[in-house]
Every structure is written in C-alpha cells, then in structure tokens.
Image (cartoon, rainbow, N blue to C red; front, top):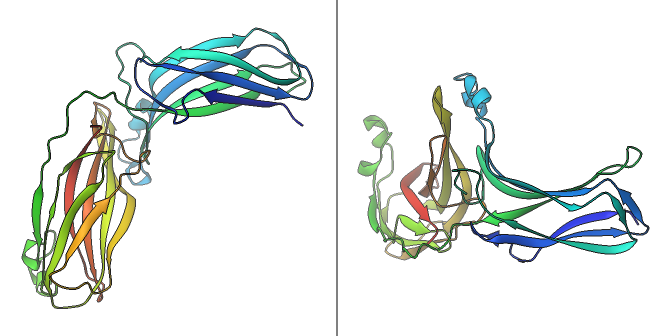
Length: 299
C-alpha cells in the first residue's frame, strides 16, 4: 500500500459563498511512519483566458497580457517538518473565503476560452530521495442570495421565410414555405431554474426532420489591442423528432448545466454571455434558426 494524500471538505456539495469559512481535513494514509519536510495547503482562485486559433494572428500582444487573473490566494502550514505515524492521520484546516485586494469573486465557470476555477492544493515536502506528494481538490463558488428576484421578460416569436435574416432575397425564394409561432417564458433566467416556453408548427410545405434547442456560450476575451469573441455550443436538446404535427404545442424545456453556465458576466478583460437557438431542420436539410440572447442570474 502506498502513501495516500487527500483533501476532504466539510460540505459534501463543495459549494461556498464569499465570506464563508472553507473547512475540512487533510487525510494522510500510510502503512508505515513517514518523515516529511512540512505539509502546506494553498487556496487559489483564478480566471484563465485564452484566444482561439482563428484569432492568434490578429493581436499576438494578447498572449503577453492574458496572464491568469488571480482572485484569491492564501497559504497555510498544516504540519511542521516531522513524522506522521502509520495508519490514517487527519489534520483539520480552515480558510476564510475572501478576495485579494479589490478583486471580485466570480462564480465557478468551466468554459472554452474563459475558465474560472477555485482550488485547494496540498503539498507534502519530502527529502530528495523521496518524491513530494501533491493533491488538488476543486471547490465551487456561487454568489450569495441578494434577495432580488429576476424580472421575467417573455418573448413571442414567429419564424417564416420573411423573418429570416442573413439570407439573400433570391435564396429566400428557395426556402420552403413554413410558419412557426411560439413564446419563450423569459429571456432573463435563473441558472437553477429551467428555460421554458412552447412552439407550434402552424404550417409547413416540406416534412420536418427535427426540432432542436441549442444552448450557446459567447465568450469575449481582450485587452487594449482588441477583443476576440467566440461562440461555442454547450448542449443541444431535441424537442421534436421527425415531421411533427401542425397545430400541436411543443414544450420548450431545458435545464442549465451548472459548471458550464454561470450568471452573465461582464468585466473589463472578459465577458461570458449566453444565447439559446431554436433550430428547425427540414428533411431536405435546409435549417432555420431563431436566436434568443439570454441573461442568466443566480436568483
């Protein structure tokens, strides 16, 4: 049996808010006594930014300025150099979750070009003949309940050849005749509640292959030299399969995945925004899309 180093938090869900104490234990399991040169624990929170490949040549200077933004950093010594007895040893720890200086603690978010992550890193230093041990554990940061509820913004929509944008007039003539109406219950959404609404196929000349709901993140990274804006799909849910019946209300229902979404965020260096697309795919492989920029909130 080898030496095992682990970090266990008191909270099973690992969700914390600014101002709370992050507590837990460092667990060391070993079949024999261990001599070490000190055990340290570091709490760090960073925003990592990167450019997509298509933007690399536009402003290379961004690479020099896009260093990780450090939101929180704190280190403590949990054990002075000495010996750890064989068996299982638990060493308690506690950190206050406070930002560095005037920084803001943003919510945990795992994106493609923007990544906001909070980690606990435990290191056991050992002599040069033995390998140092390291364990990293992620915890989740969420905004506190401000008591303010998001005000619903319902939106009604109609999809038809005439409503299409980014299509030339002569190409519009080739698009099959169709009419789809519907409504979105709100474009201001709480991340813990589903995105809801309904749509109705009023009429359609050609058979429909699929009706889909697509959630997209729009990440903007930049500096004085310029900004790069990239949209990437988070998830795609089929809400209608095959040639759906006309005049039947199709429910729109989508749950926001926690780590891949967060409340809409705008800062001087980066932005994280979200959109929902209603996609109608016809059997002749034409597809039409209705786009809804949405604002995500915590409450």
